[in-house]
Length: 176
Image 1 (tube, rainbow, N blue to C red):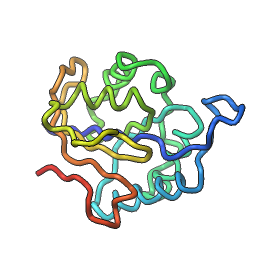
Image 2 (tube, rainbow, N blue to C red):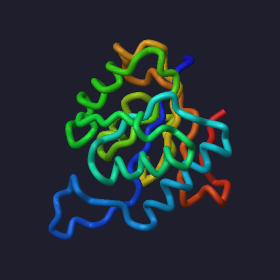
Image 3 (cartoon, helix red, strand yellow):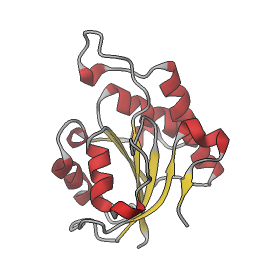
Image 4 (tube, one colour):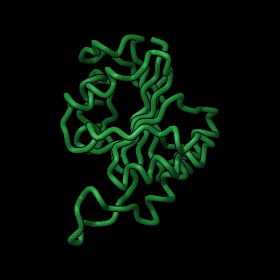
């Protein structure tokens, strides 16, 4: 396994308050957490080769803040409508379309799809023992087989789970 998939749930968003779900923007805390995850990536010397984001406002804001923090070209962020409210099979179809040359891919999206994808790719015993796998702005790193066209259940290895609220407490889960 030489390719990595990173799953990032969008950061904390505003409540509905009469607006369309798609148009919800980030709260101040969400902006802070997206930046903090980006800072953590820099600290770990990690940079994705490709960033794919849901086009929903809160997801693209999360992607842009993180990418700006790590120095990733904002114009290179790929928007993918299949990452918004389309279910697990559509999210998996996004991965099928990722070029093999992309060795480290960051996907910014939503629950329940990202949690469903994580549960599909990772053996249950490897998943963190928590009531919510991907709270807002949580980042998961997975090692996957080189060929993403036929991803099977439990084919990945969980490398780490990073929660922004715990970054300064050193309580994140690293799998070695």
